[in-house]
Length: 336
Image (cartoon, rainbow, N blue to C red; front, side):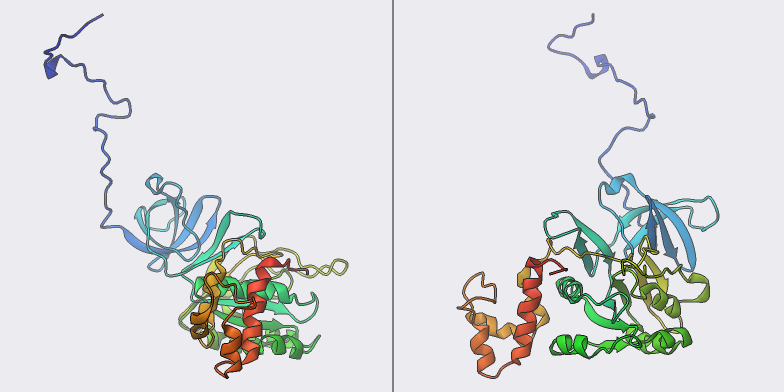
């Protein structure tokens, strides 16, 4: 066995060869300044389909990104084969800073949040007026998630030929956000799509809703013919829809600039990740009244300053009721 004295020379030190190659290891990562920009359209079992200029490019996430995952709507930087040809694969080397993130958890007790879509501007909440019956608690939860993410909400009520929309519109009228009421006939002849499209132009809009409410049917009416998705039906026994959309997919809006992002039908929308203090930002007429609230006020307690703010005529009492209902929805199950 060879031993070294106190005064060894560097030449005496044995260099172990790098089994993976002759290039020395380094912590310096390439900047990929020449990487091409793209947008993630869908994610399927680790493979991502991205739009690079006018081409669909299949890609995987680079190892250097670690556990950071790219989701639908992300702006990314890619290198490798960007031709979009069959059996080619590019690498995503950078995920650009997001302007918004829509999240949800499986339920209110689940600490693991799931990113539904990134960089959306608007959340279209689709609910049927009948078949299946509307679920106001689910609408409330989607609204809270939209306000928390900084997205503008849009309420789309379908199947108005089966039930009137008055009760639902009355419940959400004080929130003062846009809505569209459609019927099955209007979905078939394109009238519904034309009215919804007016709210989507120039925006990236994520569509969410309970299975069977007609969400994918509406999406199909808004996108080019060659990008339409499979639709399902409502079970006559359970009153529930069948999940036909299994992964989120960004589709170009036909007839105008914009993106339609179809997401899988949901049966629950957990809000474990939502900080209730951020929901007040969606109520600019009430927010100044919180200056007199005690520290960590829940806005639904005897010392809340919002009661006096409303009594003095600064805001509509219905707005305060709506705020408190949305804040309380995190403590309630959707079926309550």
